Length: 184
Image 1 (tube, rainbow, N blue to C red):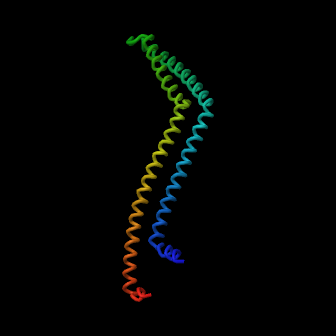
Image 2: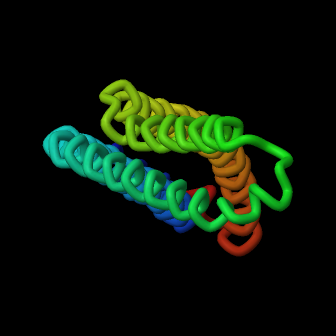
Image 3: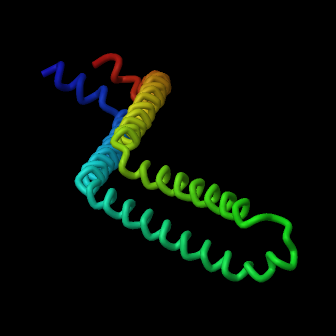
């Protein structure tokens, strides 16, 4: 019976306030973990969808590249046709030099396009994306854990000091207002 009274006596309003505050911090940590888990799962689902759709992406890239080459050929022919009459007036460059320069530009454009579209199909890029998200989440969790531990340690020191101050004050008030309590 004495132990139950002592345990009831030790739980004060300050303790209840601190417990509530620490529960709020723990709830915040749980919510952050859930959001990070959702982010990680979404990233993994995105990666799986990309892998499933790689064949479609390859076909799209091939179709885009072939249309781009056809458009480049047509553009080149139109340019040469439009400038043929000017070539006789201003013979600065030969048709071979112009064709060579246009071919170089076409190759560079095709190379850039295939590089850009190739990165969409690259499994290594998808795996890097997942790994970077996982590392980011792990880094955030470690930092959050250190922060929360630091806050809890500081809070326990403050709570203990407040509890000690409350006990000192309550003992003084008891001795002042209830002096007969000593004799009971």
